[in-house]
Image (cartoon, rainbow, N blue to C red):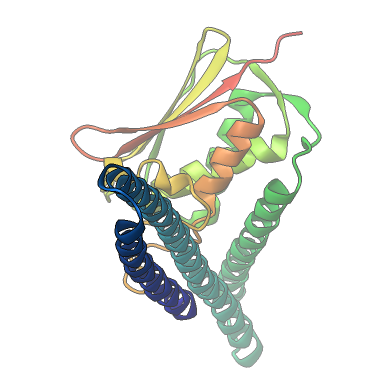
Amino acid sequence: MQAGRGSLRIIYVLAVYVVLQLIWWGYHIIQLTKEVEPSESFNSKVWMIIGEGFVFILILSIGLFKLRQLQKRDDASKEKEKNFLLAVTHELKTPIASNRLALETIQTRDLTSAINQKLIVSALQSNNRLEELVNKILLSTHLSANSQESASSVFNANDSLKRMVKDNFEALDSLIEIEEKYGEECQLKMSLLEFETVVSNLIQNAIKYQAKGDPILITTTVKAGNLNIQLSDSGPGIPDAEKNKVFEKFYRIGDEMTRSNKGTGLGLYLVKEIMTRNQGTISIADNKPKGAIFNVSFSIYSK
């Protein structure tokens, strides 16, 4: 990043030098023209030289502006990648350390069967976190590199959603309550893995930021040939300026070194990419009095 900025400064210095040289040679050309041209012809030549110089400086300025924009985008991309690496390092170290502690405790201590079972369950949950992280990274790579659709199947949306709510709630061992309101059952035709990824990431995101003591509300409705799934939480919410940015790859609100919530910046990116691949939509609205509402819409399958 520093090397890129250094190169940009060199380009700015060269651009200033070119402009100064242009003014210098323009001045001399005007002086020479004044000596050999009559006054009327001289005036027209001066304006022609000034006009051409102005166009040159304008084009140079636009080029420098575009170059600066590219540099800013490159810096932002590198910053997001750095945050991603920091987040992944943290996400990997935590379950690995937890598994090691559980296994060492089982190995070195004479524990009751109940305690052993509890440690095994804890280790399995940590292993599930590792597997989920790896799957996110692999799916992100697949979506970025391969535009082909995944194998699709027909399934009942509400049944699959209920199962994903139960699985995520148990895996996260969360104290947050989830209220579920299901509308009419319908069928979807898409990759079941992609549907589960969308639902799982939205649920985990809501649990991560949900205020203690308040339930997360999940509702489904069928309207105009679409299934709408809505997840409402009462967390800190998402500022308007960040509502589109949260779907960018590796993007997370705040500083990676100071934020308290875990994550890699891939969850909502995967949701957005999957919805786009399946001609679906996703939107974010403000919940009242606080929090966020995520709404995803799928086309219903009809035979």
